[in-house]
Length: 260
Image (cartoon, rainbow, N blue to C red; front, side, top):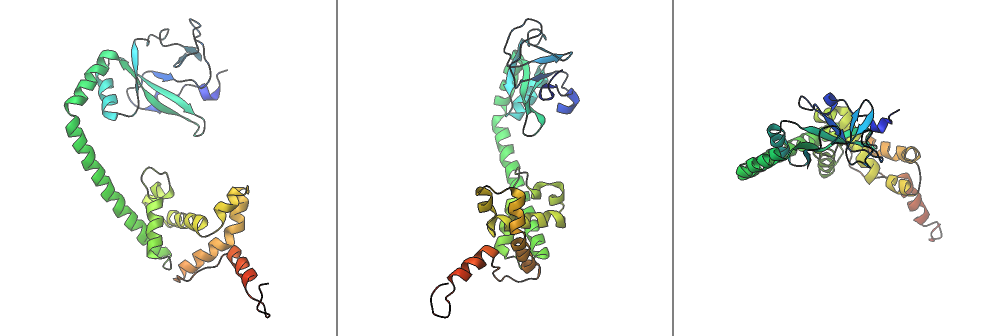
């Protein structure tokens, strides 16, 4: 039986429509079922058996790592035969692209094409970056405005900080989710709750002390809700957490003028 982490992904799940061949970078030592060479850096699965690139008739191809989109696209356009190279990410539970295998001559021609228009592509990247930055700024402003609508007591600077953090491009945070981009109340509320949890309660300290995430959240739930209630009601007064209240009580003088 082939291990789940080594089951080759269907070509259609990697990309379409050019991925006729999928090559896997194995996580474990593998020997070729044909020539018995190994361990192999890349394998092709044929009938659930690993084959080296030579036995799979792909040995003449060269590896182009991911990272340069234009070069990868053009190399595949120039190459009569190509393959996608993937590796299984255990943490995410999925295969991820590592690059492509292309003909050496195709790679040379693709590099020449990229060198010919490098300045034009640089200017295009600058324009695209400026456009994305403007879009992100407008979205962060809209997100902050929605926070202020739902939590009128939230200070403007705090609402802006929450919005910028939650909506950071590429972060995978709630602001970049479909619900976040739609400014749904649930997504906006989740961003505010997360900010209060980390900045206004001892939540991080509890985690560092070894407490489980669920127990830490249970202990700070009342403090989080108190802060949210204050912000919903439109007040910007300071909310004292349970831990701060206990500290102030210990330091408050008794009738004799001495600390308790």
